[in-house]
Length: 190
Image 1: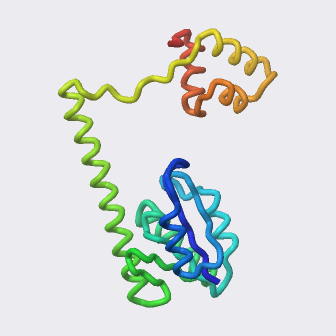
Image 2: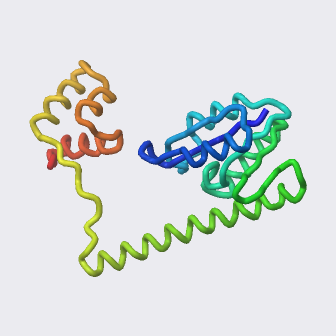
Image 3: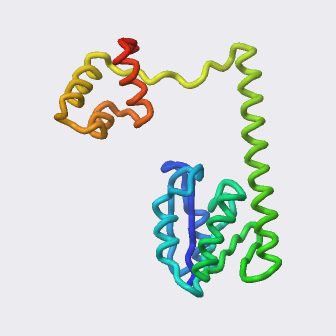
């Protein structure tokens, strides 16, 4: 069977283009993640890896949709190889069923990683220049109502609600919530 893997970086992004390609390629089932590719710990990707069997093929629109760097790409493809599952990337025209495809996989994986590193380097350089010119101030700090935070913090600390429930009530990510807890416990809530 043929299985498609589709990924976009955020919930707001559209998967239609990749899904149409998968239909054109005649895939039997599509697994879709709407999450950053920073990690291979993606729900639908894990489901796909668990689902595929010997003789199946995993098809992606491009390497960048599957993995962020060469190491991850080669690791994921090695897992597929152990299961005797082939990997195909349409954009780069890679098919691991062929020796040339295996070689090109490594080359394109390295190029994709280099491209990503260059992008991050240019971004950092741009931010540094903007900071020098006083035009970049960073992300705006999330404002939390002090009284609301204190009430939910006390409810959480007393064990009446979980940290996850507290985060939800405050509409904060895990990282921001715990940063605010540290600030508050240091009596520095702003």
